[in-house]
Image (tube, rainbow, N blue to C red):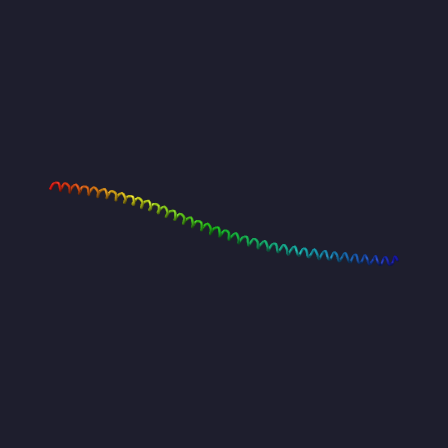
Length: 134
């Protein structure tokens, strides 16, 4: 029985050693796979970071260009608004001058009518005096 027990014990020890070696091999292989996955992940992270930075840089450049175009557009509108305000001022001056001229024309017409009335009265008096002399 001892002999059989020694054989079984030896076989168990042998199996246990083989199992331990197998487990160590699996653990080593697993660590290798994990390391490789981490390296691949790191490379992917690096590539993703480069891509994100590239996209962000391009977006910033587009925003700067759009901002500059908007500033130029605003400056153009401001310039056009100033020109319109100048035209409006010139128009108001012209309207004011036209109103002044119209008032002057009305005044001259009134003066002319007064002179015509005066001339008519003087003719009438002159005719009366001429008729009285005759």
